[in-house]
Image (cartoon, rainbow, N blue to C red):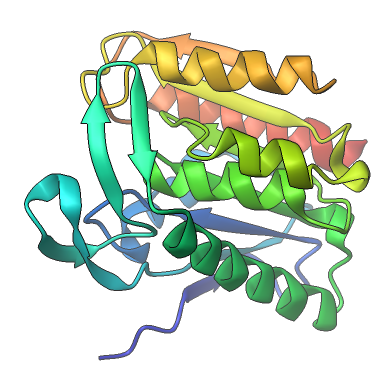
Length: 222
């Protein structure tokens, strides 16, 4: 089984990189179709990297083995109990991908993390504790899985990290309250996340994707 990340360059000389993490039970191919829908101009060629989570038993799903960034021990309407050891292993995986892009010549300030649901939780955890300044974070239909871990390890380099956080108003998998809770924590820590709510369930919509593209263009022009 080839578990190498999917990598797509939209031009011969990418000027930024975006590492996009899928949700529980999906794989890296899940968000590949989003690229053209972002509407990025051709003068902003980018490198899109879609890693695959490893297979592991997921406790809250009866121990069923699936692609997961970390084990979820229990679910409740307004909380999650997660295994921090597997969360931190996924954080290290993302950090290695960031290091590879820096080594390939893309500055850390031009590297973005994005993630949906469980992938967004890893993106939150990684970006906020990353030693080098990143370009921004896109957190979709997600939550902060280990806020105390992030609070302890909050990186001075990313205290002004641009954050686009979005959620579906009718999300029955990750309640909007969990997304709002993450937003509120970021604000308490001095960040200023941009929060969007869309009339949808646990998914993404074209309006949201277009807004992400516009946000990326603004960040890349900054």
